[in-house]
Amino acid sequence: MSTCNKLVKRNVKLFFKDKGMLFTSLITPIILLVLYATFLSNVYHDSFTESMPNSINISKTVIDGIVAGQLMSSLLAVSCVTVAFSSNFLMVQDKANGTIKDFKTSSVKSSILSLSYYIATLISTFVICVLATCACLVYVYIKGWYMSSSDVIMLFIDVVLLILFGTALSSVINFFLTTQGQITAVGTMVGAGYGFICGAYMPISSFSEGIQKIIMFLPGTYGTSLIRNHSMNGALDELNSQGIPNTIMTSIKDVLDCELYFFDNKVEMTTKYLILCITIILLLIIYILLNKFKKSN
Image 1: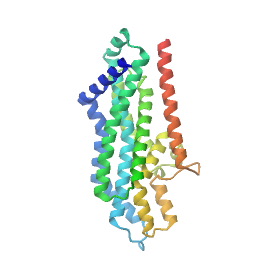
Image 2: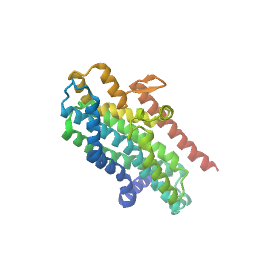
Image 3: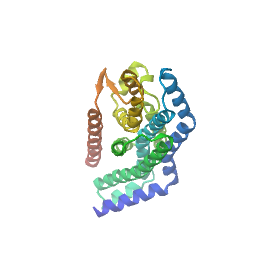
Image 4: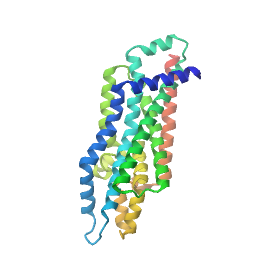
């Protein structure tokens, strides 16, 4: 394990020293934070206010808390996956520049090498995403804090699960990449497209019925919904206590993707966790089998 530890330390250090990879991993949370805080927060605030009946007076602080929670959940749902891909690009770079061949000609086992890349990606992604989560919590505190201690704890659990999901997914996909051009292409597609297919950039209800059904088969969708629930749970409870009818509250939760429906069947919170955990395990098994198959050939 000493060899694995040394390789993990080497990979983590190279990631944080490589300004290109570090900037690529940070650009998604930075862009989203600036975009939401500067432009979309006002749009969300106005659209939410206009959707409420005129007879109901809602505190501006509550609305700000809901909007801030929506911002935080969108940012974290995307960043946990995109940062994992950026962190894992070191494995592809080692293939592209021939470094991985030097490792394989030495006494380092292929299994140890693969494990070191996975653990290093997990550590690097965890550091960045936890910092991003703390920054988002500060933003929510400034805008309107309604989160309970249990909400915060569950939010961090959601973030950890999404980091595990993003690391496993990136390990499987990046396994097939071998050039710098492929890194750029995949990084661009993941950065631009993942937020849409997981429901972070746009509510699922805004898509056509056919696309909605497809999105419900994607595990990232359930990760986004989990973070949505724990980011906005306190603010939504406060909104309900101010006299919003239950029927309207249900519609709000549906629009915000706090509640998901798989072919008109409501998906419970435990089911969302189960889907995410099973997906992580399956991706890990696929990654192990890919490395084992390659080694045998």
